[in-house]
Length: 382
Image (tube, rainbow, N blue to C red):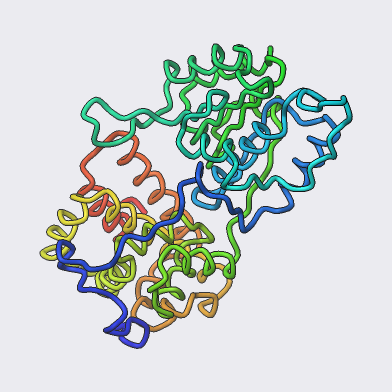
């Protein structure tokens, strides 16, 4: 089943994850990545605001995860740390330096090296801290972490220019943390820049959003995604490139995770299970769920692919079977697709998303995340 799409040579055996030979894909981390292959329109606006001395003190970079928001934030930080000194500070004769025409900072520049090493004295990067066991990040960005921001921004710049703070996954701040951010925004220090990276803009309280300039980052187009994948994994096959482009929803972060965790195998196995609807093979599903639960990346790939399949089946119910991607367009899922009305499919989408969110946020057993997903698809509460 599905043999026309999953060619045997494209993927390793899904059942032997310990012996996988797929090389881990890699791109430079955001603080050391000199390139931003998309979102050039945002950089043009930011550059214009800077040159006109109208750059806001607080920005929100909003959009799906893995599309370059953090890379863009570090590019802006490097630019400000390089060019943001007081006018004429370094000019021998007091003449005004020409306005910069690009946000590029050469890799040979000391600013680039300091930012890449995490050692620039005027830049701080805040993210969710690790849990008490050091095995995973906490589910929220707490107020204790956020309270470190204000004292740093109020200090004088060691280089005579800007001080910059980047907050990753700012939408994961709890209410106390968001209130602490709000106090900073109400009385912003001079020559201080706060950049909030948000995957879910709606999770930010309105009073924060109203005090920030928001830039909406779109998912990457197929050409950009393929370009990045070739850089990160030069040995990637044409078949996997096509598959990852379809599955990743324009997110390079998701594409890399799916490549590293052999997402093609996960999809193939999932489709085999789904083709058995309405009689799930529970004898195989339980050990499968147990295997997925052992690795964060494998479970993350499963949840993304499961939601992707369900969302596409819902879309097909709304606008017609022909809307399905090629990999789902056969007859194997027809019984599942036809089982529910459009309203029921929409409800399944919502329940599935809420189910996975609850498992993640409460650190519940990921095996139940997998088994519960099939329960929802099987009509339990749908």
